[in-house]
Length: 404
Image 1 (spheres, rainbow, N blue to C red):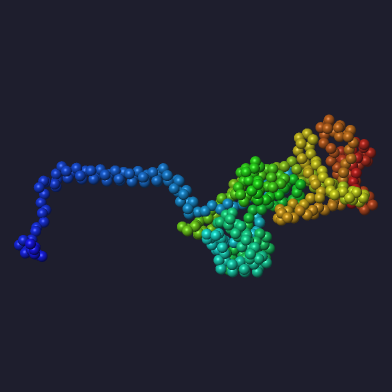
Image 2 (cartoon, rainbow, N blue to C red):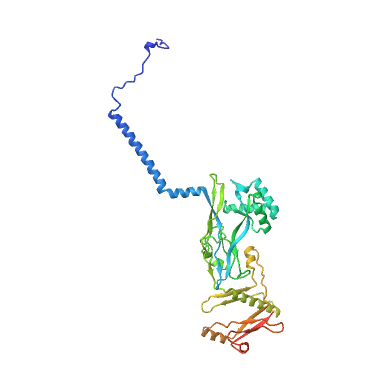
């Protein structure tokens, strides 16, 4: 039997759209609508509760996370506390040291193998090299070492620029967009070449020093005291890194200037050293070394310690020869002695009996007042409260002065 391909219009099938049971406004209809309303209400309550949790309970943590994603923390070297003597004379302080730094994001970029300078960055470094007489390879090496420690910190390419280069770069900052002149904290010594025997030097903490008892709070790359008072009281003088911030974009590229917060007030370390007595003791030891050379005894050097026998406080600590404190702070490889010999020096000879009597009476040794004489006469020395003749005839204290 073969069916026709199409049926006549009168025999076409009609759709069946009739429901046998009533549905609209029936109990089943209201049950389904009510169940859907309850489900929507639960979902809305869950969303409101989640929004409240994000805004109120976890708001501070999400804010911190968003800030960390928009900013990067840069560890900057901070200033150190001051050091004064017993009379509040400033021995060591912090000042600004002018350097030329390079913007790593403007000079080059990072890839899977690290930082590499771009063609435009190499051109800028080449022009700077012609001005400062520093090879481009040296500056690129300094930048790569700097980005290993902190990728977003300015890299020092010229640590000691002369004044002419500073003024030139300041006046032509638009011509050198990748470099700028700035300053970093460094130690200053108002007394000059003074105190190399006890002040000590600074240096970057080594891998062997990390984790030791003395440097238990230090981190890699931090500048700490290596010798002397700077090392002994490093935990007091060293505030650690100063956390600066720089804004970055969604790809982690620098998108804003480096913002360094204002540091807190630093403590001041007061020593028992007396600066004037230290200079006098240094001059006396140097004179003794020179006198020994003149008498045919080639002494290599000398030392002296002046202290309070009752409290143990050290007033002066001398070692001759010694290195130049200022030169060694600027250049760690410099250890040359630059001491000068004074023209007049005074010393006091006291017998052991007089020293015992002075200790029993709790009196300090008499202070000498020396006046340089003429070319044919020796300087005159006298103790306070007695005449010059009495001082010369006294067996308790016989000061002797010599002119060199």
